[in-house]
Length: 312
Image (tube, rainbow, N blue to C red):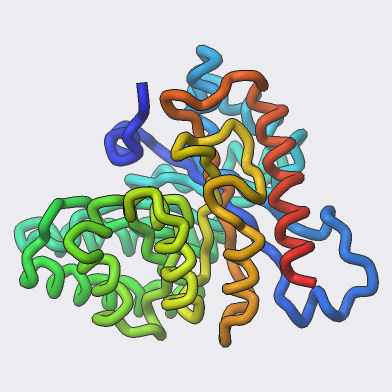
């Protein structure tokens, strides 16, 4: 049964995934481009869902799971967070395995005037706790609601500007994330993120596959989003599919040509240093041929090769 990430987040306590790669000038300054030079992170949804299909409860076995993430060549973990205390819980567990908490993920209601102020305060409290854990990127998906009114979008964007300004003072970046609802109605919510917020405070987490799926499985749409907002992208979520179904491992070329995607981003002014999320996950129809460790290991290697070849 396909899992809905939004429902998953309601029950999640902490965790998510990413990739940090070197800037253009850093790579060009090196004479040898080794895949080992690229740090790859992974998100909680990916980890939980792949272990769940093996009958393994991630929260009850996180020590074993973190050990396998390290063995797969991952540098760290992006956590899905609901409360400040979640940061401490997972930061301790990650440090045991020398894994980083470079980014976190949250989804809160910033559009409803009855709860937005309280939700904003909670997000700021999470960010303040995350700073001490070394978090640099706060990936945030506003709580979904189909057909938000103009008043709700305006309120949401005002709160995003406030949150982003606070994060900037903390030395963190706010990276807006999205799913299908934000791409409904001519993608009005998605585009309002970019047009009605301050670029100094609000950046974008470019989720390639939701740009694809949220536009009726259109790679053209994913490429156009990359072209439109490359200068605002500070984080990437990477997922691949074949004929619309998520693949078991991340690969460079299937429904989405990631070589083309990165060529677009590489050519964009201002795009050089980015936190990239490995977010491969299983759904109905996804092949089941590998164990989680092998899935992560192969996906990490494919991401490293993609990034190193794309940046040369």
